[in-house]
Length: 461
Image (cartoon, rainbow, N blue to C red):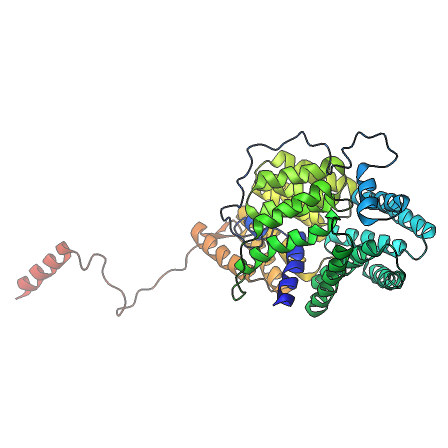
């Protein structure tokens, strides 16, 4: 049972992290963005307005202290019982990843590696950067580089653990590396490998807790586990039911958000997906805005903000954040898919077609290409261009075997019959030649017709 529960945790990360709004037939973006696809009563009521007064994502970054490092660095050195400068170097490098300054982040990790040989910080930096790049696009473009760095990081951390000192940190970061690999393996469909990595990660985190029980970042995994275990077990038929621990999970995520040394922004992003699942869209927006103020160029967070405003029908704000993604990462293809969905909601069909054509210009997986073809089919469906809509839906079926493509074809045929034309050209219905066996005089069974027939028969007699 424990192994299944562990898999729920990593499954939740994947479902939360890679959700793509998708149904082209019924504009079900919001429902498709949640794991359950429903809007149950939230564990906490949504807020009235987004609090715009939040200026940073953690207590440390809000510090007005005149000390050399942020307050969280001193707290991290205390709870981990580590060298202050080492914690500061790690904190600075991780912040660069959140800021999407990837080249500088790799350089900072490598510099720390040279200063602290055997710390594995060099390959750890590469793991974080390459995974961040791949998660932005939900692809595997840097998989070779990632695998090399991941293997190096695990090997160096295992060697470091053979020497006493910094054990809590080393177990914590090893658990993180293993956890990232569990998510990566699940994205690849390697579920057994993912499960094994998740089990190893949890063992490492457990060891870190024994050494540094007051290290707040360790509660991120607990929060994700307690919230998503409940959601997933309720949302998948055949899985055992668990006690509802959603509120406990939310409280743990909030604690990391406020007190986390390294994972405060990660907890805020986890809460964004949590509130989205809960249907509390304003709370979700608040969390995403909190990270945006601290990390305005973070692509994944800005994609989420664009989607949240789209679900809330605030299309000007939605477009603003999507365009920010385009300006920061012009090669990001996901943003064009969401722009297509947003323009379709606004009935801006020409803009939607420009966006979907841009999305289709990238190298895509078959399913992604099929989903885009369905979007383009919908554009022509709304233009009443049945022939083009039909051709695109057939291509979507051929490329991705999408069931919704079959449904779209049925919808096109019904619409064509309703409007009496194909491709905007009115059809002339074929002549009907009645036969003696099947044709009946009009009105044969009406009372007047029956009476007239009876009178005619009597007259003949």
